[in-house]
Amino acid sequence: MLLRTLLLLLIVPTVARAQRDATLEAFERLEELLEMRQGDGQLDPKAVLPTILVSATPRYEASAGWFGTRALQVLVRAFGTDGVRLCEACMTLRTEVTGSGLVQSSGPIGLDEVVRLDDLYRGEGERARSGVWLDETQSGLAIRIVDLRNGRVIFAQVVDPNLRSYTGTARSFRLAAEVERRARGESISHAFFDAAVYPGQHISLEWADQWGDTNANLAGFVFSAFDPVAGLGGSYHRVLEWQHITVGGQVIVSLPTAVANGIADADID
Image (cartoon, rainbow, N blue to C red; front, side):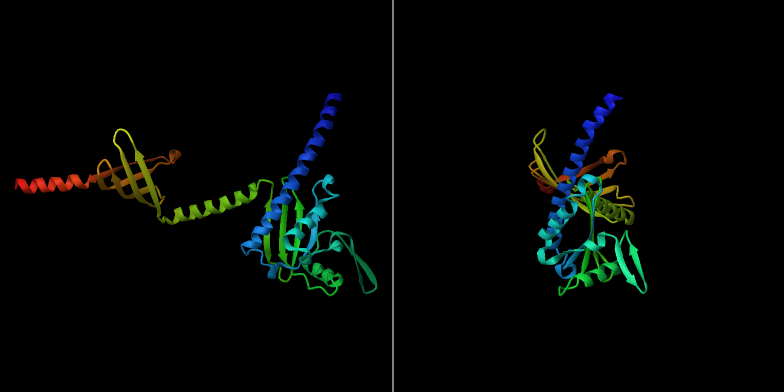
């Protein structure tokens, strides 16, 4: 029992430190993503700014003391000091006088309440166009930027230090597009380059279309040089299900040889 307790005392600080490092690195990736999305037009300043930080929720107790400040720091760097506001009232117990009583509410806040609080505290500043919800996750951060006028989600992303979730999402979309293309039976063009030194030196270029109900067929034409001197022909390959191996062949006619044979036959005649 004593040994187990000592092991826990050694492991817990290490895990907490690793989680803190992962969150800090995720903040760095988030800042880079926000800058890139502004550069490519996905986060249009006219639609996003000014923005208001509605919620910054840490997952771990060790992050509670600095998570909100770090979130503001990243947003200010990405959008500028004039483009970011903080709604502290959105993150605490809210009290509202209604008629002859008081209403206290806590928990998730609605868009109408965010707009009301922004109107109450923004002074002469421009009304906020969007709100930011930022949560710490087990592997990094989760961010949502929502249009306060109509609830449209402008940007949503799970961010980890290595952007595994980001690249995984992009890979999933590419896979879905490929599966749909295959289901439609649409062809896709390929270009192959082949060079050999032994036993016969040659360089060949092959253009082929992938087609069929399951896109398991590859057919096209081939141009070869050196051996033969100049050759032209066709090719066909079949893609097998096992390891996606292609089995097929090429038929190439040597153009100089064909011409020479034709001349020789003419002379004989």
